[in-house]
Image 1: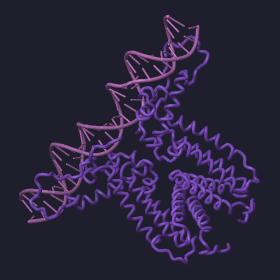
Image 2: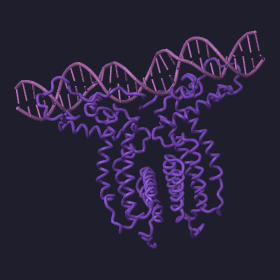
Image 3: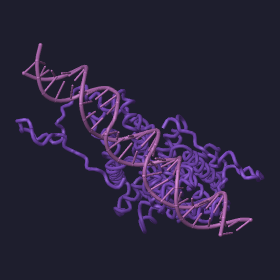
Image 4: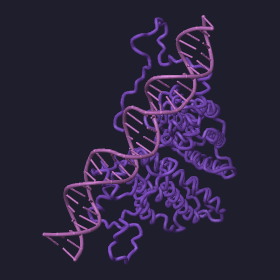
Length: 233
Length: 233
DNA sequence: GGGGAACGCGAGCGATCTCTCGTGTTTGCT
DNA sequence: AGCAAACACGAGAGATCGCTCGCGTTCCCC
């Protein structure tokens, strides 16, 4: 727990390279076949399922391999260790989320009412997490040792930055520290609301989603300096 | 992971009881000495420290014993298993929190402004968790297998009930389901805000606490049916 | 002061988990 | 066809963790 043995990074044998040093192939001397790519996707799916059910730490690599219908040895032909599975999975989720959120966070028309912007963001957030439950499972985990924590931090920082950017359209003339703080609060509300929404189904889930929107709108509206006056109900 | 061996509950030797069967000593044939009580407190302190640093699952009983300065065998003289440590620790925290919160949730004067009630509740919540970081560590954990999850559920339900009770003074005439939902949302905001507040120190922490209060007040105020009209600032 | 119970120790058992290794099979390329 | 590399397997090495056991020490009580 205190210290770890060094992880051997280079699988190549330092003594008899092939006679063609044309490409210094950084870290991927392995050329995957189509079968390999399929296995990787299969293993990632299985990992998502197992992580979702047990969390990262409690999930065993053997269980992931079993879920994928392959042997433990096969799993380690595509991933150097358990952490790499979560890293790769997180990376793919991040990529997909960036696409999903691009339309919301990318550019916000200043004329758009705050309520509409918030509503759209919450809806996308809920939809994405509803479709990829692993994402929340990996985010919520207080376990996640090693580099996963860094990935978590990076994602968190990215989202805060996006929210800040979005808020800056509405919170003009506020000090940067306050905007950052507001963004953190919004993200916290987002996450808490998501947990509540995902814990229910159907109409009840929709009701919670609506509540989260209400919380965010009522929290942010007084901060907007007359940008979009509250429409009388 | 699938099944556990039976846990021997009675350490007594079944064959030569003392000649005084006056009390059927349910489960505590062990009469603790003052030294033992001290050790228990010591071990609980150490467990709190280790749980706080690593979470429940990652914390090893050997590490707890080492932190307490005793041997693993000694630890198991006072706790039947690792789970019991967390249970006992949680129980003591619950007891202390019940005392801390009694003054806030016990009875709310209907004349008290909502802002004041919310502010007091948040302040107490933050103060308690700031003083006992283990509490949050055990609450947040998605690990916590076995009976700890039940304890978690029980605590959660208790807090929701308290908040419901408190809200009922302000949200008159609302359907019960809506009040319950509102209570859940309030607790979620509470927890999310606590996480943010505890992640910072000094003035920044105070600022986050104030933000949480703002979120809750602005969320709840429109729901109060003219009970306490919003004072013009 | 003597006896029994509570306390204390630490090596180690059994279970589990991550990851490796030797071997056999499939695939792509020439 | 033939060869090298990628793929697949599964037993098990190595490490860790929860927990036990036998034995010695300290304390309470009579």
